[in-house]
Length: 252
Image 1 (cartoon, rainbow, N blue to C red):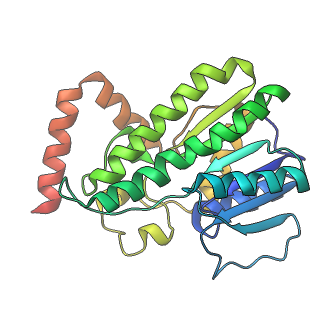
Image 2 (image 1 turned 60 degrees about the vertical axis):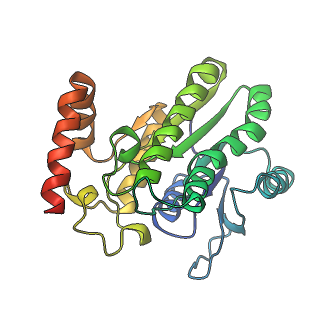
């Protein structure tokens, strides 16, 4: 999948990874990049190829309406990046409200986009999804049961899309970084996700561009994550034990 002259949507686009993705797409000569977010209070851009729209992507009707508007004004969407996310810390006692927020944003927003876009992509025989999952989806997040669980589910959904439609022209990538310098990680520089260092959003965006062009399923900007993931697969029980020790060390 090439970026040039493509219509691209990025959710969670008002800052952080989303804004960095948008800038990289523009530099790669995308036709237009539409950013979706619940607010753009601190967003600034004078590039006429960079459009921003208010949208709650957990609201299916609202998302469909925005997609229809984009299709009419700019042409059918070629690449859809489900990047919006939140981080709420907590254990199994966390509120149902927090569970619903995480589930709706990290899973159902991906589902809503796919439901709307896949039939159109199948007719053309091409399309691409980039679903931000985080390394927590491959591994875990010791301080958040909601983040860990929903990010795992996001990967499961992306896998299914890739398996089902990959031979029909639809590409999928999952973005699984550890800590990235964004509003989400502000003040969390010493937490477990940052043990291997914090990455700049611009570098993550470059990795995404490369993965789309090469149609690579797993995007792991932090190289260490691949080693952890392999350790998990090779000896699941031992990996659990290691994570237990890490949690004890960090909590002591």
